Amino acid sequence: MRTVLVSSMILVSLAAGGGDDDPVLVHEAVLDAPPQEVWKVFSTAEGWKALGVAQAEVDFRVGGKILTHYDPRGRLGDEKTIENTILAFEPERMLAFKATRAPAGFPFPRDALDRMWSVLALTDLGDGRTRISLRGHGYGSDEASRKMRAFFAQGNAWTLARLGERFPRREADARLAPIEVSVRVPASPADVFRSWTTAEGIRAFLGVEARVRLEPGGPFELEFDPSAAAGRRGSEGCTVLSWLDGRMLSFTWNAPPEFAHCRERRTVVVVEVEAEGLRGTRVRLTHHGFAEGALKEPDHAEEWRQVRDYFVKAWPGVLDALRKHAGGG
Image 1 (spheres, rainbow, N blue to C red):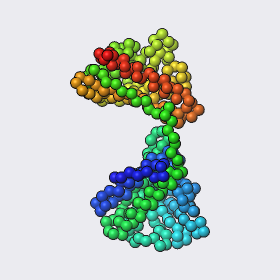
Image 2 (cartoon, helix red, strand yellow; image 1 turned 45 degrees about the vertical axis):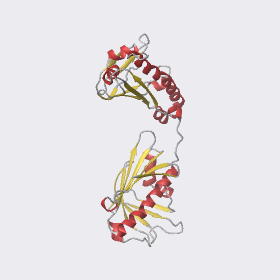
Image 3 (cartoon, rainbow, N blue to C red; image 1 turned 90 degrees about the horizontal axis):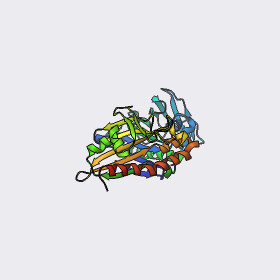
């Protein structure tokens, strides 16, 4: 596999396989657009035109035809028309199609083209981005098929480059990026893991009451202000997501009460522990979800930035309390 940057917009992986032994042609990219927007490109005539064809007509159904023409002076249906037939689809996720008519002058044998089909797959990455995979199947090991495969490799890369131009890369907002902090604790990984996954452990190093039950959906509720009104005491309503004994814990988390809108939403915290040196443990904490929250609710993006600013200051103090509890100076 090799990786190239196309138009400084999308990352394309060409998993070209092993020639005769692995002829599947794979192009992949991550686009800064949700699946429904990428799907429109391949399911509508206007979308195909955005990929660079002059004319297009789409009958979007199983057995329907996708007709395209690169010459604006030509006519759909003439000898220069390209015809693809839809084999199967799942809206916003998968499209399988087959070239059933090549334009006049196509430089490869018809029987080689007849053996081919393509599968387009879209994966929602959950933050307004989509992974697109375009796989070409049915290439033979004969010389004509190898040359045709190389021909379509260039064409598919060009298609993904056009998609990158249609969905330009968004500039990352540093104030919405995940928070990553770590500390070395003079204790074993097992002891550190217990500190995070039991009410007694949390009480010992943070000095707050907690309700923790290590099971999917179990509570992960810490009371930072027990005198406050119900719902404003701490991480009420937060839950355990997953864990690996002695290695990792993930849980949902909420914002402090002063951030009224964001407090009703949930972010995700992942705590990882790993042995480091003699009786030492590296603890890594990653807090995700700020960019995703802002993307879903742009009107509250600034509040999400403020929530992240709060935790940028808070989490180092939490890890320092853990280090001091374990005997760190």
